[in-house]
Amino acid sequence: MKIMFSRLNLLSHVLCAFFAVAFSCSIAFAHWVQWRYDQLYASLGGYLILAVALYLLLVCISSLSHVYRFKSWECNKSKMTKLWLLLGLFLLLCWSMTFFSNYPGICSTDSNGTIRQLIGELPFQNDISLLFTLFVGLFFLPGYHVGGLELGVACYSLAQMSLMALTCAWSVVWLYKRGTHRWLLILIVAFYALNPYIAHYATTMWKDIPFSMLILLLVLHLYDLVDGRPSLPKRKLLIIALLCVGILFFRKNALLAILPTA
Image (cartoon, rainbow, N blue to C red):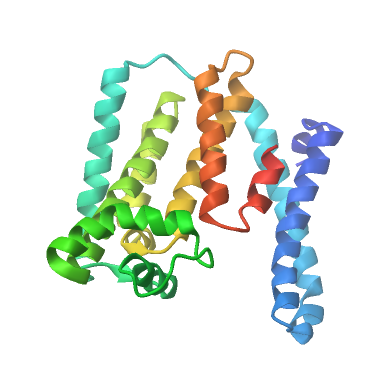
């Protein structure tokens, strides 16, 4: 542990402490918002312990990252594209059992308002992200006009499940291109394929699902930005900018997630 602490400079320790305290405080503030003062004060010690534990965890991760860095190598783009599509198809097939058992898909409370806006029962509004409503409409409305609500929801569920499978598959390919051990890649693919929560949310009409996909893509591109500059192509910077814009429009409080990346 002493060696791990010595590998990091003062700024790294400050950043680890900041993110640990921020995460712990976010839980505490949730109790304030819900007016649960008794739970808040009774749990302050727990939040402090959580902050310390997270700080130590972040220090360990940061220290190890100085020793075990990704070693990127040039890969055949055609082979990587085929691997990406095959992994995406594999994940889609694994999640299809959840889709068919919950056909035409799972609708959250928010999605009821989204559907009513799209079929004209409610005017368009931004209580639920307008961009998410329009995004749902791209896939929902063609199915709705052909086969009603059921087919409309099914079309969106399939589209979202496909996009999520491709996003997860891309993260695996990203790790593969950076020299991650194959046994670890197999575990990651198994986690994506067999985790029932991922399959459940992949078929759920909810704005947090595409929002989470954009966050994952942003994190990986930000790593490329930090690790690859100044040789990072301008195309990557454009992708990062577009991801940030998409994240901001999918959730009104997403600014809190974007500001630390500025």
